[in-house]
Amino acid sequence: MPAYSPGTGRSGSAATSSYVPETATGSLPVQEAPQAPARPPEQRSHSKAYALMASGTMVSRVLGFVRTAMLAVAIGSTTTVADIFEKANVIPTIIFMLLAGGIFNVVLVPQLIKASKAPDRGADYTSRLITLTVVVMAFFALLLTLLAGPLIAALTKDWTEPMLALGTAFAYWCLPQVFFYGVYAVVGQVLNAHGHFGAYMWAPVVNNLVQLAVIGAYIAFFGAYNGSGGQLDSWTPQQTLLLAGGSTLGIVLQALVLFLPLARSGLAIRPRFGWRGMGLRHVGKIAAWTLASMMVGNIASLLYARLVSTAAAARAALPDGGASVPGEYALNTSQLITVLPHSIFALSLATVLFNDLSRAFADGEREKVAPVLSRGLRGTAIPVVFFSVGFIVLAGPIGRLFSGTSVDGAAAGAAIGQLVVLTALGLPFKSIHFFLIRVFFAEEDTRTPMLIQSAIAGVGLVAAYSMAATVPATQIAVGMALLYGVTNVLSAIIAHVLVVRRYGDYGTAQVADTYIRVGWMALLAGAVGAVVLWLMGGYTNGYAWGSLSSALVTIAAVGTVMLVAYLLLLRAARVSELEEFLGPLTRRIPALRRR
Image 1 (spheres, rainbow, N blue to C red):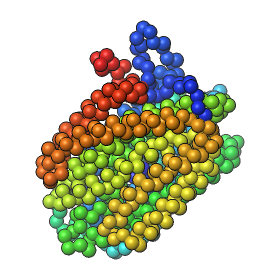
Image 2: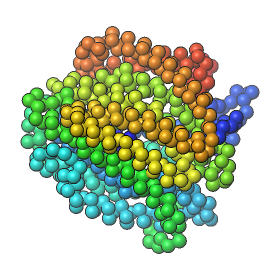
Image 3: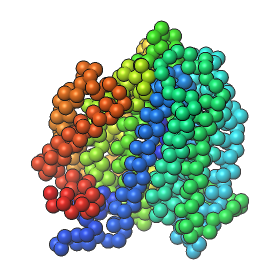
Image 4: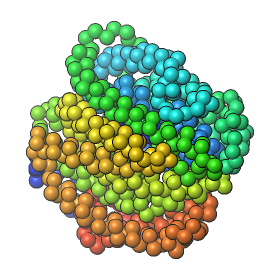
């Protein structure tokens, strides 16, 4: 299973208890009916934080989708240049996660929460931490940029000299992103630790707006990709500068914009170079396992991507240009699409609840872990399961939406659609694993996640290299998409067994029952949607495949029918989790609450 979210590289990122505390899912309205008790202020703030984070992620992802669709218009989706640019633009994300991503995102949160209890609210500790981050990440970014050529050569397979040369040119412009990812991560986690959750999730919106402007300018200056040959041969340095330089500009502004809410937080942040006494030795012991885990996972991701890169060379050798051959860009696009519900619901809720889990362990109240974990898992079932089925039903039109406007758009859309189906299969298990693994991190146990990651990486790499030796390069992306889904399932199973063994049962039967009941409702709604899709030519190369606009209309129509059917079925079956999931929405729409 990839240890990073592929879309970020180009868009931007429990013992059983009868008591279930209120969490970010917000099962009770803010303005209660007379008979309902009011929630404590901390619980109401959870709902507010969750809603703010989810909305920021939603807007960012929608803009990311528009950006991805526009990029396919500009350079194609199953083309050599698209795969080359994807390689160079995703490498900084993976390398950042390889170097320090896990430390920033998981290990430092408990440390920052502890520091925030100091008389200065942790200002001194935070100043030293941000200064250290700037120094370390600047060094690595400079070193990696100087090694752009060797990196591209090492992380690709069977590429020709022109492909390597263009990949290196792209990498020179993209690799400085590593520095700004580090700044974005550490400042974002400082804000999270002080309860300012929204800014971290809304900052990528700035990035996406910049990138939309850049791609729009590219299309205006150089035109849209039309499917003709010679794209690589006619590529110019000006195209490289605008496309890759604009991508990095978005990441720069994404990081810098966080300094505005940091200044408003009241923390007296200033450069501090004295790092003695920060407890780095303690953090280092924790971080050692986290860093090892991230190294294992992201090295595996780099190796997976290296195998998938053979599709670009294989496509170039085909007489028809190989528009139906998915490569690295198409594979990452499919994951960017299918990770949406995980990012909006599971990631946002888990980020809020992670602080609760950390405090529970810090205060010695382990009995609070189980209800928080159970609530989080059940709360995400409603949207995640529905989206998984929806992606499978609508895979064709979704692929068409992200395949560009060239004469080969339908063929490229079908190729992307295949990958969407396969990646969607493991989506619920991805979210389950994500929640379960946070329990270990909250207890500052980073060794267990590392062992899980190592086991999954080992199994995945053996399967991937076996696949590469037997599957044609033109189908390697399809095989890898299937492998990602299988490893998501395996990861969730292993994490569940270890969580139960250490902390006791967190209500597994109740969680499983929720997913099964919700799954049946989603399948029935999917069947209804499939009928509508058939009527719109989705299975006969009809209207749904005609253009980007017809694909969008089809997705909207079928998706709406599925959603209505799904909600009615859940309501008829009296699925209690529906009320919890719709809580934040019904509080703002009284008519919906009455219905």
